[in-house]
Amino acid sequence: MLVDDDSFDSLFAEEVPEEQVQDSGERWKILIVDDEQDIHSVIKLSLDNFIFEGRKIQFFDAYSGEQAREILSANGDIALVLLDVVMETDHAGLNFVKFIREELKNHFVRIVLWTGQPGQAPKKEVVMTYEINDYKTKTDLTDDNIFTAVLSSIRSYNSMMIIEGFRQSLEEKVKERTKTIEEQKNKITDSITYARKIQESILPSDKTVKSHFPESFVLYLPKDIVSGDFYWVASPATDDKGNPNEKIFIAAADCTGHGVPGAFMSMIGKTILSEIVTGKKILNPCDILQELNRSIIESLNQDNDKEDIQSDGMDITICQVDYAKKLVTIGCANHVVFVVSNDTIEVIEGDMFSIGGLFTILQKPKFSNHEITIDRDMSIYIFSDGYQDQFGGDKNQKFMLNNFKELIFSLRNLPMEEQKQALLKEHLAWRGNTRQIDDVLVIGIKIKI
Image (cartoon, rainbow, N blue to C red; front, side, top):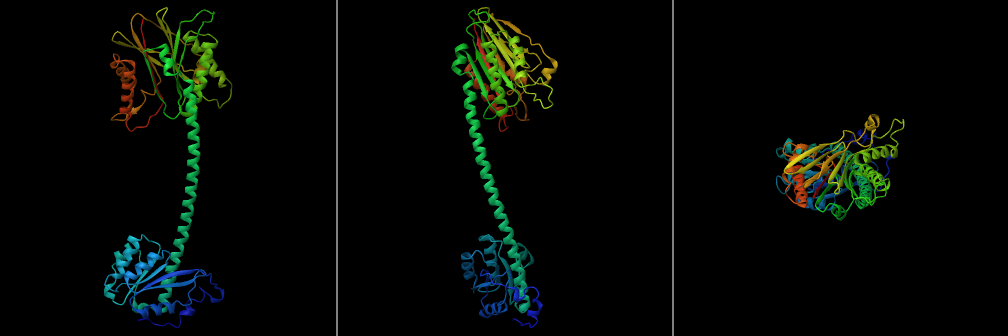
């Protein structure tokens, strides 16, 4: 039963002074769910002059749980449900609460329960689980209690909707920013992808490589879209004295970094290397390395006194094959080379210096040659460190140079193209789901007399 309270107006006079209240035209939507018509009338009468944040109340009436479901489903912006626990069934009210929270997934609408049968009061865990804001018996429904329950619930709903508005606004801004970032990323990726075409165009084609070394392979796997590794083949028409040249050159280089920075260095290195051999006619591998080192340092201004000098450069192997003299001459800057011949494998260790960079500038190195006489069929393998340094396997360890050496030796009797496919298969199997950590370059050439 509802009890009138004459002190109601004076109790809340300071909170909502009528002379300062203006009706905004918007309404707080309240759903009254009770199978007694008198309850609906008394609730409305108690809240007749209710205004909060310039908004009055718009009431919706339901006399059963089923009718309440239809109304709430059609009005998702209802702020408060004043709900009788016992209606057509003892649990009709609680079933409607479950419908709100579980089926509609509506966690914004506030819920105040009441019952005329105190024995039907919901358990504490139900109140906690279903976010019920208040519970009263119908004998507690004085004007004061009704006003207090509605005001606190509307305040809570309003605060939640303000926060939700901020959240949605922030989410929209995040989506817009993410879209912008994605568009920028796509543009950058498209540019780098096009750069890959440019980089690939300056690398020797398979046809070019095989025109000089019919039995050969190039395994080339950039870590990113473009690569800091590059390879190079040349056979100048004449030597430095203008005489016909029969020497063939092939090189494998590993520039500082990978991706775009490495690709820039690879293009610089390839351009300078071609100028040294085909332009300046410097054909001795150790002299080529010496001139390449000088040119890289000069091109990158690494020989000045600035503090912010970048220590960029490259590791590189250059092979000169002279069939007329039956001689292979190899120059290595911080590289090793495998030579397979007569069921043996030899490791040629190059000079410890890289091309360019601060360490090389300080040490002022002199590069040396390694000469191998061609007296039988042999295979030469030149490579960057990407294959051997790849992490993988059961223990996520590096593949290591010695394992790479053993793998190369085990493949020695296969045709060169089959060796390439076997190396690729082993690399992918070793890597598994581990990311590729560096560019990979392996070149194999078979030399016959």
